[in-house]
Each structure stands twice: as C-alpha cells, then as structure tokens.
Image 1 (cartoon, rainbow, N blue to C red):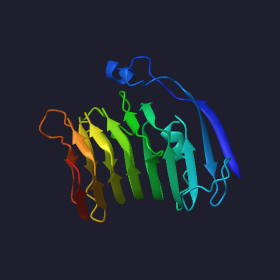
Image 2 (image 1 turned 90 degrees about the horizontal axis):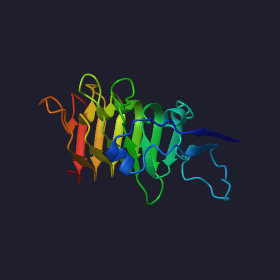
Image 3 (image 1 turned 45 degrees about the horizontal axis):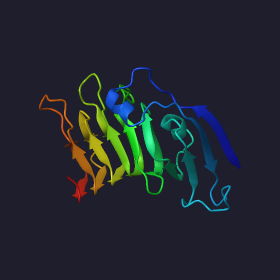
Length: 212
C-alpha cells in the first residue's frame, strides 16, 4: 500500500533576517509518501532501504516521525532546503535520516524546540543522520542543542552544528555510543561557559573522525 498526504509547512510570521535570506518560511505545500518494504515507487524504482522509506517534501518532521513504526528498520530521505521550526523527537529501533542525493537540509530552529531541549531529540534506538545542518537552537535553560542525544547509538555524518547553545548534548546513559564523522561545529555556546560545541556525558564510547 502507498499512503500519501498533503499539508502546508508551518511558518512563523516573524522570521529572522538571516533565515529569510536563505529562503526559510516560504510555506510550500508538501506531499508525504510512505512505501512498504520491497514496493516500487512511481518511477518503477525500488527504494534503497530494506524496510519502510518515507520521502518528505517540506513536510513537518514531527508528522514524519509518527510514520516510523517502532521496532522496524526505516529510512527517511528529505528534499534539500531550509526547514524553519521543524523540530522532532525520534524514537525508533533502527533509523537512517538523510538529505536527498546531492543536497543539504538546513534545520533553522526559529525559536522552536522539541520538549524544550533542542531541534531534535534522539530518545533511543540506533539512528544515523547524514547531510543535515542544525542551526540556532535556543531554550529557556540555555542548553538548547542541535541534537539532544538521550540514549541509544547515534551516528552523525557530514553534518553542521552552528549557532546553537550546544551542538550535540548527550545524556549519561552508560550503554550509549556516539560516532561523529566529517562534521563541523561552529559558533555554538550560550556564552555562559557552561555550553559547548560538543558536550558528552558518561556514555559507553565516543568516536570523532574528520571533524572540526
């Protein structure tokens, strides 16, 4: 079966000039399609993920998140572009989230946060994130993170964390693992000396390669 829905992206009336410069807040109408494992899409191509695949076209990530079935392997491929205030909490067994081929997805917080923690919260599971920019996370306790990683196994590949109060902030789960590859952390921190580009708690392991 194929499930499709259309909606208009939520956009704020007061957009930061820097965000407006990059085209955020255009309010593009979007389609969301979920393909069952092994099914061919409209072009007759099998999708690359072994199980569910979700193709989003400027669709809210929170809406997309609800399509991911707990306990199954899934993949989300996102059209390149600026996404304003599209925050989400992810909780899946095994999940890959990446920008569509040749592009980047820029997540501009725009004053919004997931659970008052950051742009994305990774609740649990094995999650891989590729070719995303996390920009401008701010929250009340000044710990707004591009990604708040609470538990599980997280791989961050070819991502940018800029102008957040924390780039990536982890919990203290003793079994969690974090791998960062070919990523950039720039201009993060709230200026209070208690927030950072990367803040890692008491987790099982951290591996950083090709990043700065």
